[in-house]
Image 1: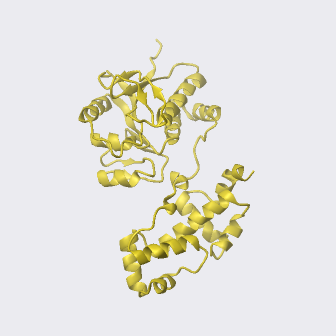
Image 2: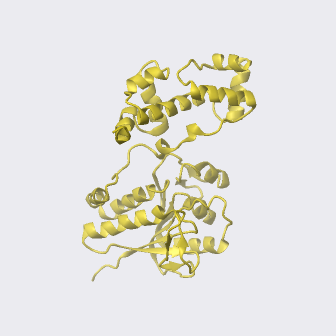
Image 3: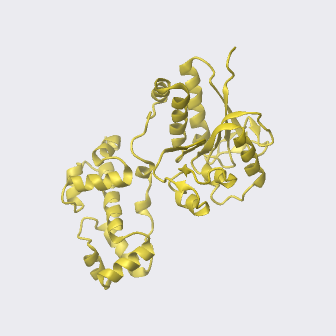
Length: 324
């Protein structure tokens, strides 16, 4: 007897990020082709019986809506939308997700879809990820979650979550590997010209180092100075002297106002400057380290790995096309 395909339901909220839906759908469709049989049947679900306008302005008709109850699901995923951070909670949609998850083998979210799925309580106590830009917001709203802001994909029991946008494809490939094995998953990745397992973490794509200065006026001026002169001496003593405070008092109020230690801030600014140099100029990691005040290239390498999960050399190689 032929095994029926596993149903993958993807809820597309209003203003959905199109790639959160189409990316995983393409992965599952390619897995069907690579395996020579219909393993997966992807169903898109809307919150109303209307065309969905994506964040890009594209419109599409979902296969069904939250008015349908599935008898059984293999995988239930909630796609993200830039509007979810400020959207009112639709308790009917939350209740639907709770009911469908109870009928699913695994469930979770893609990108900011975690903000909606977390409302169900089904992620409580779990390790999850989401788009780096809303990771802090997700953790604030749901303190019981263990939010891994740097991860591309997280799996904790039946819960499977993905980071921002294209990471939905990383998640889908991981699920294909779980179901069909490594060879099929690698073949899918090769056909779609994406990483089978992406190196590093999603923070390599964030721009946290370019955020606005925080705290009182004198500290904001200091932050701007460090950001524009990352290669200078920025010891606690030198920074404290610049704002006319004792080193101990300076370190205390800096952490209080800015949310990190002075040393962590200086490292963030230097690594952000290093990233720009590696992306935009014909600079080797050694020369970048010299320009930014590191004693040697190993110091930059360790700092880069801590923040982005990849080495400066690998990062530079990945962005070599920008210098052609």
